Length: 124
Image 1 (tube, rainbow, N blue to C red):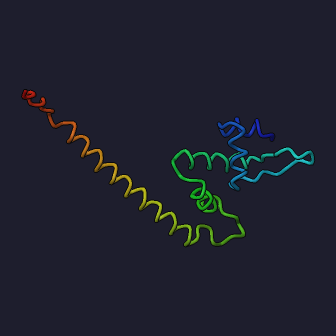
Image 2 (cartoon, rainbow, N blue to C red):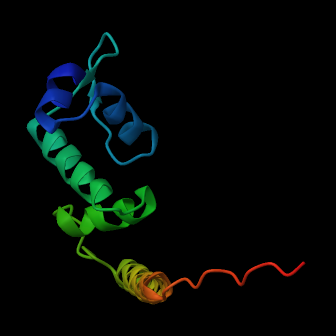
Image 3 (cartoon, helix red, strand yellow):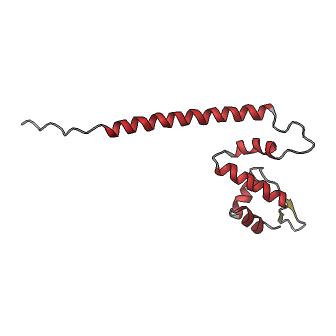
């Protein structure tokens, strides 16, 4: 299927599928005329890519995760230790960032709850 149809099925503009291709996340076949030809498997992969990116993962994270989601039958590494280690570090980064945001939220809430005293009158 052509890019417009694939994009409609994924629910993204066609330029996003081109971006997935440019970043190496999705490589559709090409027709003899050079048009992209998306298979149902390409559409499924694009849907996975979109869901992961929409969840806040980076393109690098997605590139690491895709083999774990749909492994090559000839690849017995599936989700190798390097990928698991990288994703474990990413999870720790996210958890630390969440904790930082919670501390900031608590500080702001406390600061905003403190009544503001009017300034003392000016002395001549």
